[in-house]
Image (cartoon, rainbow, N blue to C red; front, side, top):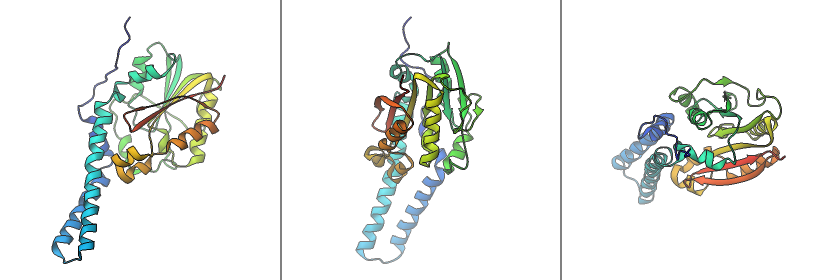
Length: 259
C-alpha cells in the first residue's frame, strides 16, 4: 500500500492567517489606531524634522510588521506542508502504538494524528492553566472548536499516565504558552516519565530568533529561543534525536527518552 504524501483536513484557503488575526485582533487594532494617531498629529501640529522622521519611522515599522506578520502566517499555516501533517510520519522512526497529544485549548493536530495512526491508542489532553498561561490570545483561541476532538482536562505537572506507558508525546505549538521556566520544566519531566525507554516527544514551536523577529517584530518575544528548548529537553532527561525546520520560522525537535 502506498503511503499518502499528505493528510488534508477540511480547511479554508486563508484560515491560518485569519486565525492569527482573530487571536490577536486587539494588537492589530491598537497598531492601526496608534499609526492613525501619529499621522494625524504630524499633519495637524508643527514639529521639528527629527520628531517628524521619528514618527514616520514608527509608523513604517508598525505597518511593516502588521502586514508581513499576516503574509508569513499565511505562508506557514496555509501554504506550507505544516498542516499537511505527513512530516510527522517522516520525522518519527516508527508509528507509535500509544500516544498523547497535549494542547492548551486549540487542537488542530489530534484529528490528523488519529488519521495518520489509525491502529494506535490515543489520548488528547487539554492542559490549560489560567495561572500559568496568561496571554489574552489564548482565550480567543480556546473559543474556536473547529477540528477539535473531545479532550480530557489535565494538569501538565501530573499527566494522567503510569510511568513508561506511552510511545510518543506530541507538543505542537503548546509548550510555549507556559511562560515560566520551572512549570515548563515540570511538563517536560512528566513527558519523560510517561514515555517508554526509547519513546519520543515531538516538540513543534516558533523560535525567538532573527527570522521570527523579521516576520513578527516584538511579537517574537512571545516565543522561546532554541537554547531554551534544548536546555529544557536536556534538563528533563531527553536526548535530542533530530532537529529541523518547516519554513524558516517553525522549529521541530524530536526528543528521545534514553533506553
